[in-house]
Length: 72
Image 1 (tube, helix red, strand yellow):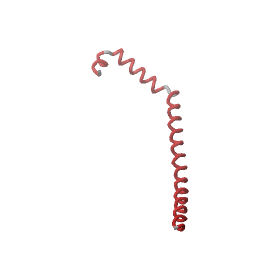
Image 2: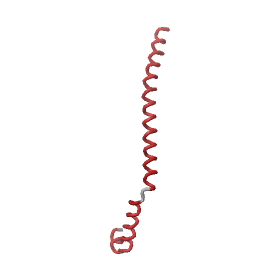
Image 3: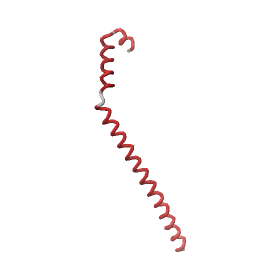
Image 4: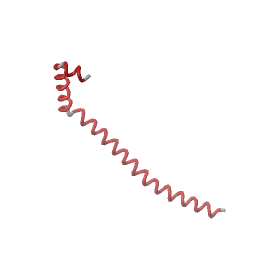
């Protein structure tokens, strides 16, 4: 494939022009960045909520098992 590209200078020029156009086009990049940041914020929120719920559930479970131990 590289040989075909190097043998065809107009194709190489077209590829270089398209690559330059994609590098200079910032409109699509910002949407991707925003989507990734939103996903990261959602994951962070889930981790924080799970951390708080995990502690609360652990304490609740200990209370339940302590109460169950007193029943018998």
